[in-house]
Image (cartoon, each protein chain N blue to C red):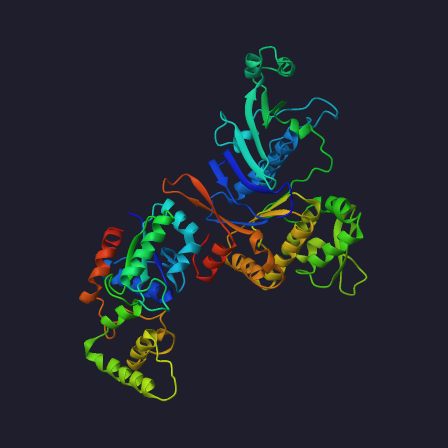
Length: 367
Length: 201
């Protein structure tokens, strides 16, 4: 694993169904497996942790949108912006924290053995003013009504206070989260992704085309084109003069495009992919994995991918068992989430390559 | 009571124990109730995460492994040495498990050694013929390899008319009373070992 900022271990407390979940011995390619509702997607979401408060809040808030939970600060529709902002009375953190009275916290070790501790705590202006003891930073919130929801963010020794929903109002340039949900059909974000990631570099476009050809043979060019007043991401396939919208080729192709685009965008960072195999035919699975691993290595991306599928797991094993990737077996981990006998606590077990290979070869269940 | 997890060496053991559990205890075991460590007890080493996981799920670990023989080609072979070696490995690695050593937690041998003891006496002639075949091979001037125990069991099954895949160790029907005696007294040590974990599932 080359990325200095890659996680070597990760702990999250008070997030969704995780009172306290630790995952140790992480690699560059991490496959997360487990039963339905065990928390695979929640673990992927927790791995969005970042030490910039607005980035973390925005990422976590965005995961709710993928689940169709839309609670946002907005301008009332009959008042032109800029104007007053309507702040929802609901606290979106209630959908993320197991216990709203306790902080959501992270403890992360990176490849260089640097320890980061992060936490998010829900509070109110009223509580802050009663705790402030003349703190200059806290005093700015005295003008808020006592029940105004705030978030106290702590990163190592630094503390930040911010109103909840400030993430909706913060302008973060070209904000995109490094998370691909299980089901996400064609979306205009692919056009902005193209403009930001693919358009500036022919080399990146060529690598993208080569990766996409795993699932869409014969793709020669990727571009955007206008279709009825809207920009669409499009491809030229075979000897055709015409470009076709990407969405024409099905959800598997769209997923593939999103995966390889995000790999290029997430250089030296992490990328989380839910149901990594969804939409991919079994006959293309091995080459799909080879493409993903090649892109992850090229871009120094630490990958966390979740699956239910035994086919997908067996394919990962085949891809690393022999051939060019055999030298990188030590970069592979299989992380199984299971429930303890109390029926409530979830624990993560990390299989290194040797144990993973043994389990698959002998037909022992890892999921 | 949660079902135990049986730790074994191979598909043959899995099939036999599934049939034995059904007949002796009325318990249906599925593939997920087993951890196969491969053909050698040293495969325990590559399954530590599996053992920890199953134990944390509240399931008892039952290791049912071969004694083999006390010969140079078997590491720590023979009942006494193998039992001690496995016990030592469990202690060194902090794994809590109960252990049963094939064929009967007393003698040297393997699963197939046990299987020979539960074949039907009415068909003893098959093994006498096989013995003559082995003697013939050993008597030859050419150095032939004499068949192993698995081959002997395979021949028994084939001679009694079992066809196709059902002859193979992964698919044999040990509940077939025309071939096997699952009520044999030879299985009492195994049943006594399994009873505390299967009797009340």
